[in-house]
Image (tube, rainbow, N blue to C red):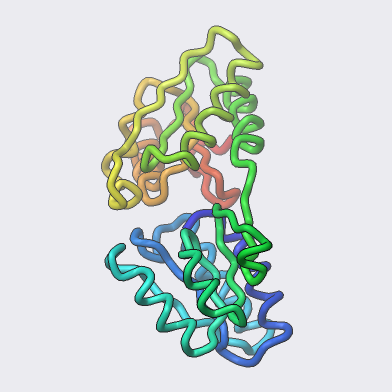
Length: 239
């Protein structure tokens, strides 16, 4: 579930007008402890409890085939839901249940109880690409993505555009780490973006693999690695 910084805001809003433990965070197949998007959401739920005393039910999807069944059981208990790829039918069958769908869409006429939240990933990545091109001494930068889906392509397109705005001749190394859901969770594949002296990672747990490679191989500061979370920067050579 991408972009949890924004996910936690709707959770707080829901909690303000409802009772304890009546909302749930839905984590996708990659799990919630990914040192990335979903872990941010989990941390946000912890902050909600610390600041308001309210608790949040966590549901980690184990099988895609059981997604609708699991969400339906939660909705039957009157629980509001925040997650990605929320089935439209759930909203229609439970009109009193409020649903926040991340990176999704909803017709307000058909599903007035659904709030879709989308992001312009390419905008922030454009700025990152510009910074990467300015910091690069070799003229080669890298982008590490997770699954080759629209979300990650947006990150990559923005990064490429930003880098080429600064240096039209810059070389961009952009390996794709995989297609299935576990592509987010393989830290070994991240370091494949070799040959670049500045790397931008948007790949779930593949990102830490990139940081491990940076720390292990170029500790003196010749390689800079940065990802979409401001607190994740290679300690050897932060941008």
